[in-house]
Length: 368
Image 1 (cartoon, rainbow, N blue to C red):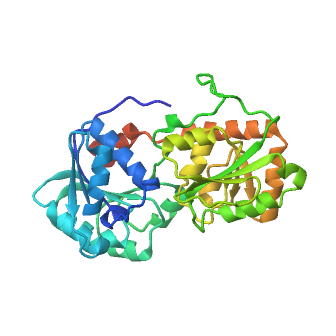
Image 2: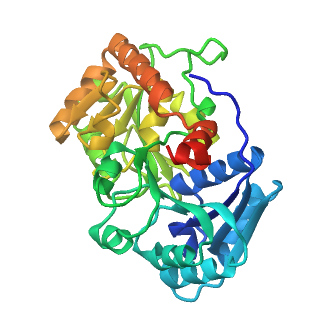
Image 3: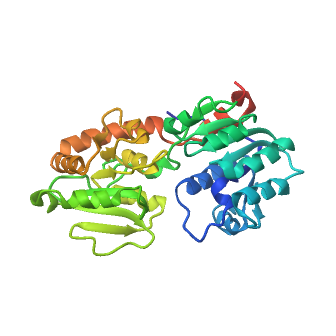
């Protein structure tokens, strides 16, 4: 479904929980990259945006957004973590007026800043963008405040239900989804997947991370029957410092940007989504857009995406092994599941900034 390109000339204040702490020279990833793409999209549509961030973030933000008119970064000295930095940042913007204050991934560290903004009537409306389930500590503290919440998944939205005064909606997706397409797309000339070559399994995430399941992937790969394992390869992506000598048929890949991830996935055959904790999972949607079938654990955020048969659910190493063996030997099943996954991803999980503006930023829709 396509939507007409819209404009929004409003003033937006952005305060993000993660960007109010020192960044420690780690590469931007996940929600941080999403936030940069959202701000760019809004600025390109006419918004004037003020970003409040701990001062070490300022050069990194300007590197990505400095070519845009209408984007200002207020750098806050690191005086005591999110609570202090956020409150100081809110005070530093007093005197300006905003149509919307967007509080990114708001948790307890942003509570004082939210109260400061409300007390000063600094913005006409406040919007919380929630990337993870909330806590009773947060909702109890802000229960008297008036704001709407946009959640990245039904799993996250359930935690807010009935706990705040405003609307709770679900809207999220992969930004720049056109970078993720199947290798057999007619407008591209990459080689289609066939079964007369190695079958590539991959696990995608910010590694190493105990919750992403890459060690389970290694265990399952090594447990494959030898005749199956010989014609398969396991790819683990992506590491800031890739480990070596993981064993025959296993490769750890270095850090990839989003464009690199798309090209990487087009060389794969099956995605392993083995996390023990996710709030949305960009990786599984990127795989779906690339027409990869998924082997996934029974997390709510995976299950809600796989309801049309785009993968195989697993709960043990034995089940992972069985699913890998099954998909390694059945090209038609891989194709069927991959096509089902891409259809669902295009329908539900592609980010559209125009829709976000119409639903959550414009007064007429926000108040409906």
